[in-house]
Image (cartoon, rainbow, N blue to C red; front, side, top):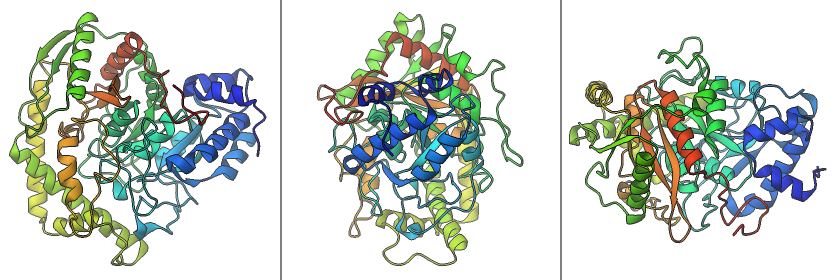
Length: 491
């Protein structure tokens, strides 16, 4: 189908966030079919270079756009699901693994139902690394996703397919999930806003209740804070049987919170990495710039390191995540009824699977206990500070191929990623706290650099207030990568 929108109008609308696109549909200035058709044309034109979208559901999307009276906060707006954890009935579901290359979902996740109820029209699935376990998206099943800011660089992982698709203008926002930084790292690499909600804020059912002792969360990568907050209003809240209670939401909603400045905050900042790894000067510059901006906005800023992040915490995290990969692979063995063949798991996944088999039940529970003790130390820290900020990543996005393992060296990605993800974004996952990456800086050669903010458990509204204030003081949504939108360099 060819869009009835003139190319200039389609490109202009693609530069709008989802909130503005939905407003155009409600006002009758554009139809849902026109929005969806224009998004499909962009994907078809640009995705062969970017490789961000790996499965499409265009026919269903066009039927939905034509048949439905747009409803919900995002009625008629095109959207993409990450091909990990969140299922869409009748659609291929691979989690980036050759082991699942022919797998098709038989049910919707609760979140998928809520996304549709918000009015979103799902166009397909985005690329991810195998089972979401690396900070890049270069699966053997589908190949590498490229960063629109520099096609030779990684878009980050594991939600890098979604991040690249949003940054390049395929859709105004896209689904992501986060078990150790997988929303926030790609947001930093692709110049987006990436918000990780508190534990229990969005549902994981019906298939999952608890993923790695509450470490996994679902949400999205967006170009604006208000899109993220409005989407959270639409999808958050408990589902039947959830193992964790959902934190109370603000009575007026997250979107209204994001539109209001916070009270003067006490903001801690630190350049200390988890194991003393070096920090690239561009990443340090992003932090210093943000610290100065916070001071100008009236916040109290103090240099303080997060306590308790010692070797025992790192070891506990390592045991939990090795066991997690064993659970993931064993879950799929049970679900599809056979073990993976010799070439159906990537080397790093197979190494983690085998290592996880050596973790006993007692060792796993000991790791949970150690991390719960660490969580209490972090919670005490946040009785004295409202936020902790640091660079999201310790390096700019590295070249594709740098964060990939081989059969001869299955642990290569773990070593290579050690300095890249040195700021331990996983702290937000093991503590259940909200966190986010803000696009605050661009390097001299045009690569985006994010600044990370960690908050107290359940206080998502305060982080969104702070993010909204920073965005109003230093808008970023109009910055465009060299590749995307109209398919030619944007300058």
